[in-house]
Image (tube, rainbow, N blue to C red; front, side, top):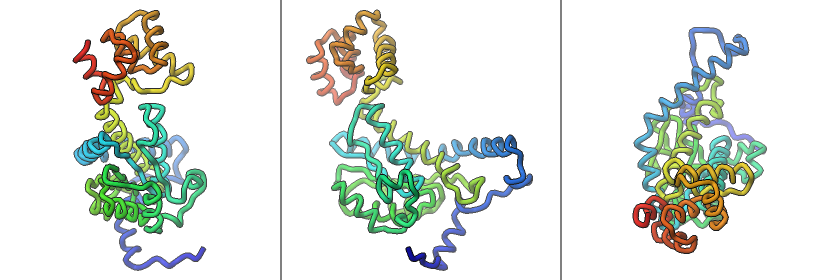
Length: 310
């Protein structure tokens, strides 16, 4: 592959990115530290990430609110990014089905395709057209929310994806770890988390990666809560498809209802181990079929069914 020279304007942009800067300390450089000193320094650095994320909470909340409104109408939440950013999007998306019981609603797209999850595909991140093409393959439309993720806030692949999404009426969100970024500027909702220089200059899998995971956790969890996929702090749409998760389902139904073990096990069995449905039948006295219909009418919100029927 031919490597193009870095343009002067691009070099100046890179120089301005705090995520590319070298961290300055009064002590020794990291390669002069003991292992204990190195991990302590990294821990101290990571402790600042939560503060950086906190500064972006209003933007995160606004994006999650807007995304949930579209998802209620059948839209999807689509993460798109290159390298570490793309991997984090795929990771968050892959946790939604087992945690919240929804397939195909939260989607992760990484530059270079699934192979890039295991092997670096760095060159693709410079291709705006690839970002647009990957979203075209998903038939992105007006009900969808597309979250472009790039620590630098200027990755062409992510920018191309957001441009395509905007052209097709989708809601756009840009997640970056610098300030004043093109990604946040072109998005309907720009989320910028200024994490500052990495302890290993330019290695954005570190502080920026941690910040990005925190933001994506908030977006996916906040949208799922709004969609009624939880009850209190319980993930009642969890799929109880192994021994550990069945024990968890029993604990959740017991905690939510206060019922005895025999009642809980009978309700779970009749509900085909759907935790939410089992809770609904115990607290309302409805049959599984009746409770299922009530949940559907309530948009899946268990609390609404309990308050109306309990």
